[in-house]
Image (cartoon, rainbow, N blue to C red; front, side):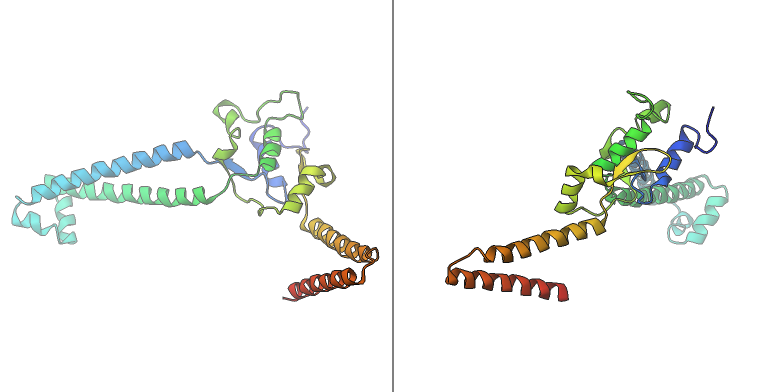
Length: 252
Protein backbone atom coordinates (compact mmCIF):
# COMPACT_ATOMS: atom_id res chain seq x y z
CA UNK A 1 0.00 0.00 0.00
CA UNK A 2 1.34 3.43 -0.98
CA UNK A 3 2.40 5.63 1.94
CA UNK A 4 0.38 8.84 1.55
CA UNK A 5 3.24 10.86 3.05
CA UNK A 6 5.52 9.78 0.21
CA UNK A 7 5.19 10.94 -3.42
CA UNK A 8 3.89 8.45 -5.95
CA UNK A 9 6.47 6.64 -8.12
CA UNK A 10 7.44 8.11 -11.46
CA UNK A 11 7.17 11.82 -12.18
CA UNK A 12 5.89 12.78 -8.68
CA UNK A 13 8.78 11.03 -6.92
CA UNK A 14 11.40 12.35 -9.32
CA UNK A 15 10.09 15.91 -9.10
CA UNK A 16 10.09 15.70 -5.29
CA UNK A 17 13.66 14.44 -5.29
CA UNK A 18 14.85 17.21 -7.62
CA UNK A 19 13.20 19.90 -5.47
CA UNK A 20 14.17 18.42 -2.09
CA UNK A 21 17.87 19.33 -1.95
CA UNK A 22 18.49 22.82 -0.46
CA UNK A 23 21.70 23.11 -2.52
CA UNK A 24 19.79 22.31 -5.74
CA UNK A 25 22.41 19.75 -6.78
CA UNK A 26 19.84 17.38 -8.37
CA UNK A 27 18.36 20.10 -10.61
CA UNK A 28 19.66 18.63 -13.85
CA UNK A 29 18.00 17.96 -17.18
CA UNK A 30 18.93 16.54 -20.56
CA UNK A 31 20.54 18.91 -23.06
CA UNK A 32 19.24 17.03 -26.13
CA UNK A 33 22.33 18.18 -27.99
CA UNK A 34 21.88 16.01 -31.08
CA UNK A 35 18.16 16.76 -31.37
CA UNK A 36 18.78 20.48 -30.90
CA UNK A 37 21.37 20.43 -33.69
CA UNK A 38 18.92 18.60 -35.96
CA UNK A 39 16.22 21.17 -35.23
CA UNK A 40 18.56 24.05 -36.06
CA UNK A 41 19.57 22.34 -39.28
CA UNK A 42 15.90 22.04 -40.28
CA UNK A 43 15.23 25.71 -39.50
CA UNK A 44 18.38 26.76 -41.32
CA UNK A 45 17.44 24.78 -44.43
CA UNK A 46 13.89 26.14 -44.33
CA UNK A 47 15.28 29.68 -44.40
CA UNK A 48 17.62 28.77 -47.25
CA UNK A 49 14.61 27.63 -49.29
CA UNK A 50 12.68 30.79 -48.44
CA UNK A 51 15.65 32.90 -49.44
CA UNK A 52 15.88 31.07 -52.76
CA UNK A 53 12.17 31.74 -53.40
CA UNK A 54 12.72 35.42 -52.60
CA UNK A 55 15.55 35.64 -55.11
CA UNK A 56 13.31 34.16 -57.81
CA UNK A 57 10.63 36.77 -57.10
CA UNK A 58 13.22 39.56 -57.13
CA UNK A 59 14.49 38.37 -60.49
CA UNK A 60 10.94 38.32 -61.89
CA UNK A 61 10.42 41.92 -60.78
CA UNK A 62 12.93 43.14 -63.33
CA UNK A 63 10.38 42.40 -66.03
CA UNK A 64 7.31 43.42 -64.01
CA UNK A 65 4.94 46.30 -64.54
CA UNK A 66 5.45 49.74 -63.01
CA UNK A 67 2.80 49.16 -60.33
CA UNK A 68 4.42 45.82 -59.43
CA UNK A 69 7.76 47.55 -59.07
CA UNK A 70 6.22 50.28 -56.89
CA UNK A 71 5.14 47.70 -54.33
CA UNK A 72 8.80 46.78 -53.83
CA UNK A 73 9.50 50.07 -52.04
CA UNK A 74 6.06 50.89 -50.60
CA UNK A 75 5.02 48.50 -47.85
CA UNK A 76 1.41 49.77 -47.69
CA UNK A 77 0.97 49.28 -51.41
CA UNK A 78 2.71 45.91 -51.27
CA UNK A 79 0.32 44.73 -48.53
CA UNK A 80 -2.76 46.08 -50.30
CA UNK A 81 -1.84 44.34 -53.56
CA UNK A 82 -1.08 41.15 -51.66
CA UNK A 83 -4.54 41.16 -50.08
CA UNK A 84 -6.31 42.21 -53.27
CA UNK A 85 -6.19 38.76 -54.80
CA UNK A 86 -3.43 39.47 -57.32
CA UNK A 87 -1.76 36.08 -57.59
CA UNK A 88 1.87 37.19 -57.89
CA UNK A 89 1.66 39.82 -55.14
CA UNK A 90 -0.29 37.49 -52.88
CA UNK A 91 2.44 34.86 -53.23
CA UNK A 92 5.09 37.47 -52.44
CA UNK A 93 3.25 38.63 -49.32
CA UNK A 94 2.74 35.07 -48.13
CA UNK A 95 6.47 34.46 -48.61
CA UNK A 96 7.29 37.57 -46.55
CA UNK A 97 5.01 36.41 -43.71
CA UNK A 98 6.44 32.87 -43.76
CA UNK A 99 9.95 34.32 -43.72
CA UNK A 100 9.15 36.50 -40.70
CA UNK A 101 7.88 33.52 -38.71
CA UNK A 102 10.75 31.25 -39.73
CA UNK A 103 13.39 33.91 -38.97
CA UNK A 104 11.85 34.58 -35.56
CA UNK A 105 11.86 30.88 -34.72
CA UNK A 106 15.42 30.40 -35.99
CA UNK A 107 16.94 33.36 -34.15
CA UNK A 108 15.12 32.58 -30.90
CA UNK A 109 16.31 28.98 -31.13
CA UNK A 110 19.88 30.15 -31.76
CA UNK A 111 19.83 32.41 -28.70
CA UNK A 112 18.30 29.73 -26.49
CA UNK A 113 20.83 27.22 -27.79
CA UNK A 114 23.64 29.60 -26.92
CA UNK A 115 22.28 29.95 -23.37
CA UNK A 116 21.98 26.18 -22.97
CA UNK A 117 25.52 25.61 -24.23
CA UNK A 118 26.82 28.00 -21.57
CA UNK A 119 25.41 25.72 -18.85
CA UNK A 120 27.82 23.10 -17.57
CA UNK A 121 27.17 19.40 -16.92
CA UNK A 122 26.50 18.36 -13.32
CA UNK A 123 29.45 17.20 -11.23
CA UNK A 124 30.28 13.51 -11.20
CA UNK A 125 29.21 13.23 -7.58
CA UNK A 126 25.84 14.93 -8.15
CA UNK A 127 25.17 12.86 -11.28
CA UNK A 128 26.04 9.60 -9.55
CA UNK A 129 23.73 10.37 -6.63
CA UNK A 130 20.93 11.43 -8.99
CA UNK A 131 21.34 8.39 -11.22
CA UNK A 132 21.27 6.01 -8.24
CA UNK A 133 18.00 7.59 -7.12
CA UNK A 134 16.59 7.61 -10.67
CA UNK A 135 17.40 3.90 -11.00
CA UNK A 136 15.94 3.11 -7.53
CA UNK A 137 19.08 1.25 -6.52
CA UNK A 138 18.05 1.35 -2.87
CA UNK A 139 15.04 -0.83 -3.74
CA UNK A 140 16.81 -3.69 -5.53
CA UNK A 141 20.30 -4.87 -6.43
CA UNK A 142 20.02 -3.93 -10.11
CA UNK A 143 17.48 -1.16 -9.74
CA UNK A 144 14.83 -0.01 -12.21
CA UNK A 145 14.30 3.37 -13.89
CA UNK A 146 11.84 5.81 -12.39
CA UNK A 147 10.49 6.68 -15.84
CA UNK A 148 9.46 4.26 -18.57
CA UNK A 149 9.71 4.15 -22.35
CA UNK A 150 12.31 6.28 -24.08
CA UNK A 151 12.78 8.21 -20.79
CA UNK A 152 14.55 5.24 -19.19
CA UNK A 153 17.95 6.42 -20.46
CA UNK A 154 17.48 10.17 -19.99
CA UNK A 155 20.11 10.41 -17.26
CA UNK A 156 22.66 7.86 -18.48
CA UNK A 157 25.03 10.30 -20.22
CA UNK A 158 26.33 13.02 -17.87
CA UNK A 159 27.83 15.04 -20.75
CA UNK A 160 24.38 15.50 -22.33
CA UNK A 161 22.94 16.91 -19.10
CA UNK A 162 22.92 20.48 -17.83
CA UNK A 163 22.93 21.55 -14.20
CA UNK A 164 20.75 24.61 -13.63
CA UNK A 165 22.84 25.35 -10.56
CA UNK A 166 26.35 23.97 -10.23
CA UNK A 167 28.52 24.69 -7.18
CA UNK A 168 31.65 26.75 -7.66
CA UNK A 169 34.86 24.92 -8.46
CA UNK A 170 36.16 23.37 -5.27
CA UNK A 171 39.67 24.03 -4.04
CA UNK A 172 42.18 21.27 -3.41
CA UNK A 173 41.44 21.04 0.30
CA UNK A 174 37.70 20.67 -0.29
CA UNK A 175 38.37 17.98 -2.90
CA UNK A 176 40.72 16.15 -0.54
CA UNK A 177 38.20 16.20 2.32
CA UNK A 178 35.38 15.03 0.06
CA UNK A 179 37.33 12.21 -1.54
CA UNK A 180 39.37 10.95 1.43
CA UNK A 181 37.04 11.38 4.39
CA UNK A 182 33.76 12.08 2.64
CA UNK A 183 31.93 9.67 4.94
CA UNK A 184 32.17 12.34 7.67
CA UNK A 185 30.25 14.85 5.57
CA UNK A 186 27.42 12.75 4.18
CA UNK A 187 23.94 14.24 4.36
CA UNK A 188 20.70 12.52 3.48
CA UNK A 189 18.41 14.17 0.96
CA UNK A 190 14.85 14.45 2.22
CA UNK A 191 12.51 11.56 1.34
CA UNK A 192 14.74 9.96 -1.27
CA UNK A 193 17.14 8.46 1.24
CA UNK A 194 20.02 9.17 -1.15
CA UNK A 195 23.20 10.41 0.53
CA UNK A 196 25.47 13.11 -0.84
CA UNK A 197 28.81 14.42 0.40
CA UNK A 198 28.64 18.13 1.21
CA UNK A 199 31.70 19.91 2.58
CA UNK A 200 30.70 23.34 3.91
CA UNK A 201 32.87 26.42 3.53
CA UNK A 202 32.93 26.77 7.33
CA UNK A 203 34.53 23.35 7.64
CA UNK A 204 37.16 24.23 5.05
CA UNK A 205 37.90 27.52 6.82
CA UNK A 206 38.40 25.79 10.17
CA UNK A 207 40.70 23.17 8.64
CA UNK A 208 42.69 25.91 6.88
CA UNK A 209 43.16 27.75 10.19
CA UNK A 210 44.26 24.58 11.94
CA UNK A 211 46.77 23.77 9.21
CA UNK A 212 48.16 27.31 9.22
CA UNK A 213 48.44 27.26 13.03
CA UNK A 214 50.18 23.89 12.92
CA UNK A 215 52.79 25.14 10.47
CA UNK A 216 53.33 28.34 12.44
CA UNK A 217 53.62 26.86 15.92
CA UNK A 218 55.49 23.85 14.56
CA UNK A 219 58.08 26.19 13.10
CA UNK A 220 58.37 28.11 16.37
CA UNK A 221 58.69 24.88 18.32
CA UNK A 222 61.35 23.64 15.94
CA UNK A 223 63.32 26.84 16.60
CA UNK A 224 64.12 25.60 20.10
CA UNK A 225 66.02 22.65 18.63
CA UNK A 226 68.30 24.88 16.55
CA UNK A 227 71.55 25.36 18.53
CA UNK A 228 73.69 27.55 16.28
CA UNK A 229 73.05 31.23 16.96
CA UNK A 230 73.48 32.27 13.31
CA UNK A 231 70.95 29.71 12.13
CA UNK A 232 68.54 30.69 14.94
CA UNK A 233 68.67 34.36 13.86
CA UNK A 234 68.12 33.46 10.22
CA UNK A 235 65.29 31.10 11.12
CA UNK A 236 63.65 33.74 13.32
CA UNK A 237 63.92 36.33 10.53
CA UNK A 238 62.14 34.03 8.11
CA UNK A 239 59.35 33.46 10.65
CA UNK A 240 58.92 37.21 11.19
CA UNK A 241 58.65 37.80 7.43
CA UNK A 242 56.16 34.93 7.12
CA UNK A 243 53.93 36.18 9.95
CA UNK A 244 54.06 39.86 8.91
CA UNK A 245 53.23 39.09 5.28
CA UNK A 246 50.28 36.99 6.40
CA UNK A 247 49.00 39.82 8.59
CA UNK A 248 49.29 42.32 5.71
CA UNK A 249 47.40 39.97 3.40
CA UNK A 250 44.53 39.62 5.87
CA UNK A 251 44.36 43.39 6.38
CA UNK A 252 43.67 44.07 2.67
